Image (cartoon, rainbow, N blue to C red):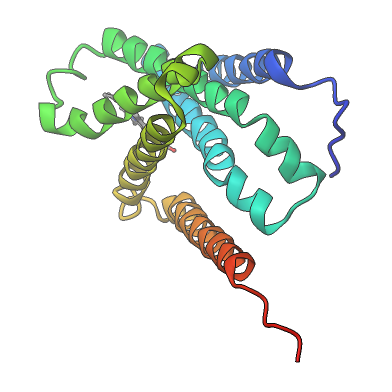
Length: 212
Ligand code: HEM
């Protein structure tokens, strides 16, 4: 599907549209369960899945723009900041659903160890750091090198939390192999794009042979 430059859905308008869809999905997941606690659990799962799709789009945007240049990948690149902020919003809904589940099921938090909460907490710290530093004036103050270093590290921390969250569920439900495979594919796509970029750079840097 070609996405034109003049698309109505861009910038904050795109963010509001995605946020409305995310809220609708979370509320539908909640309402479709007969029990309130089960409803909030379903909302936890749905918000984790919407977050995952948005994360994959932001994580692979520049790689796809390198490997498959075209209007769709250009759109993804241009809106990468908004997609990242939508991912953060989806994870805010994940936090709301977890809070609701903790209130409706008082045995939830006491049954979880600090170690069990560690990956998720690290994930939230990374999401918060990326969301705050996506503000243009903060990014400018940080400088491009520090900003890039933080964003690459943060994205990999979040990727690690998703890998752990999905991979550990594969033994109980084999369908979790699907998101695990998508993550692996995303890692390979990023690696291929990085190789392609460095090959392109070394080709351009090589001095051309003098004419015989
Ligand atoms: C301390 C913070 C967090 C807590 C307490 C937490 C809690 C939970 C719980 C209880 C579930 C299971 C719902 C169920 O199946 O009944 C869940 C699912 C999940 N969470 Fe979180 N979470 C946290 C942070 C995160 C973060 C930061 C990420 C990703 C970056 C994440 C990704 C996931 C994924 C992928 C699932 C599986 C959803 C599915 O079944 O498809 N969580 N979380």
